Image 1 (cartoon, protein in one colour):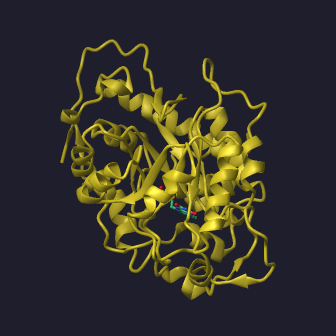
Image 2: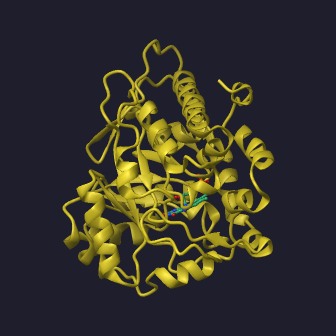
Length: 362
Ligand SMILES: Cc1cc2nc3c(=O)[nH]c(=O)nc-3n(C[C@H](O)[C@H](O)[C@H](O)COP(=O)(O)O)c2cc1C
């Protein structure tokens, strides 16, 4: 292993190394949040405010971290969140990320704005060994709904044909958040897309999003989306009980609690602070997922005990990709697996299904 990777002992160590590796504007694009970055920081602080109640004298010689995500088996309840433009982190982009997730037996969600195409990423990881006893972990496709609905319909059809097993529709980005670092850096995105014809020119994200995303998207459109595909629909970007209940009423199989890692509405609620109300509103009628601010195994265990089926991580995996490509992301997964396992052992819990709400206090 690359010498730098052996010195990475926790997920947050990747950030400083990525900062030293990447161009300023690319690093800031990944690291930054919207506005004053209050939500970006609060996502992490909110996890740190919680305390755990361990059980002792439990035989923890075997710990099972596996679970099911919409019927797909995973070895670890942590997936890679959809992230645009992964070529800004590393030339192998989503191909490396997808391969490393297969090696970890973990879910991977591909962004609409990926650097490689739906079809290229569908094959990435073929031939990579999954953990013993596990097949290919779930691979989901994340949809930004295009103002030309035909474009979105085609993306969904392509994802289904290529073997993706769920469609995640992101609903917290009717417009791009005010990301001050990108504005200051005058970041112009190379218009290099895996799934769209590349223009070759450069444009700011706000313009790119404005040119593509449908601001009129509303609850009525969930029925349209469901009509396009047999795949389960996951609604990503929910932070209130009301919206969680609506998502279920509109047929969502999954409710993904997210504030986009603090990149959209600054001063939005931290996700772990709203998990209780969402889990209550969903009441077992759909699977609940969470991202934004997950940095340690103890965060993963906290979210699972509070009712999330699994969590996703964005930035930290993108930094790991920047530092070491596929090997970097593998290292990130290895550290997380070790931390989750250690936390479970110290909690006196032998499988993720045995975590309960009473184990976490504010
Ligand atoms: C560089 C970057 C690009 C992102 N691009 C997308 C995207 O294309 N689609 C999407 O639904 N979410 C996108 N997100 C949000 C992530 O899916 C996820 O919600 C967020 O990163 C979770 O927070 P965390 O970074 O604190 O783990 C992006 C996040 C980052 C850091």
